[in-house]
Length: 110
Image (cartoon, rainbow, N blue to C red):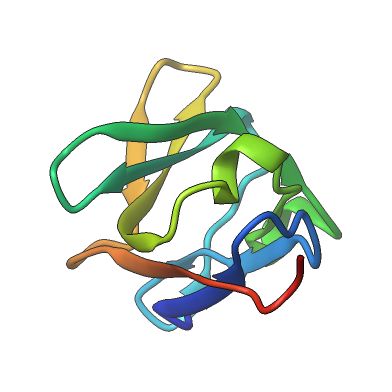
């Protein structure tokens, strides 16, 4: 899984497409009831707590998050993770080590 992403301030595309892994194998999301993207600022303020969509075959571990305008309205560095809740109540967080890094950078538009 790539761990560093960049998005321009105010942009809502492209979506964030990820493959979740259990070691070298894509996570099996067949019985996942929800996948949430959690994003916090460096100061620890929760910026995003939103549902992702499972894309492709559930055994492929692929998820997508469609950015909302409020997600990218503030320039800065953010830490992110994905929490998968399975039908039996089990919660698994990805990535297993560390976090994803998301940099929202200034754009040159008006």
